[in-house]
Length: 215
Ligand code: SAH
Image (cartoon, rainbow, N blue to C red; front, side, top):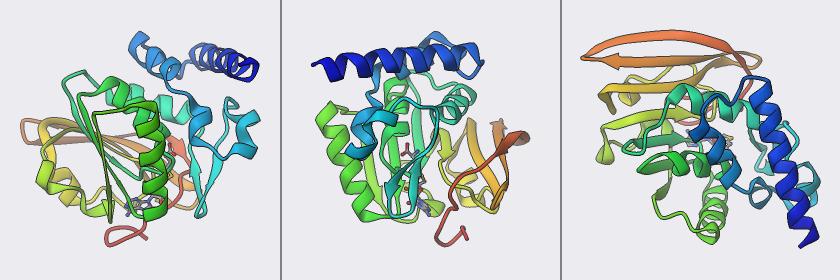
């Protein structure tokens, strides 16, 4: 009990910091971060670092992103409670849980079967019902459930694949890290009545997207 109490205090402190640093801007995103227990998504031996603003290893050479970068992507996506969202790269499922707090439905694709299985188990335990996780190559998207209101990548692609842009609704938005190694930029792509507007936001560092349209 004491442990849980101190973890929830740590969570509040981290969220205050993310607000003060300008990463969390809206009340809805703040509430989502307050609701999701990050400690459930990381290996037990790293529990003490659950609320440090750093990326952590989750196995298979993959990482759970630092909370501030998840906050940036979440604020940029501006997810409404009616949105259908596609996530590419489930990883631990933490970012997916944050999105599930805000959206109507979230589909997520993970290339590593074991990571997908573990994420499903964690998310079921917490009780999310508006999530579907598929094992596969996310660079191909999930056309059967398209169009999506919002799409985001948690791994860096050489460019935003056209087939993913095709799966976005006519007023949708994509947030994706683009580039190689430590030369990546977070892009926001907006579709407005068929027209596409793509803008760079900031330098970032993500694990690479694998698969057909990846590295
Ligand atoms: N946001 C996640 C972190 C994801 S790390 C979290 O909160 O934990 C990026 C993930 O993308 C890794 O799990 C990696 O296995 C996955 N990935 C890489 N290439 C992929 C692809 N082509 N399709 C689906 N997932 C992919």
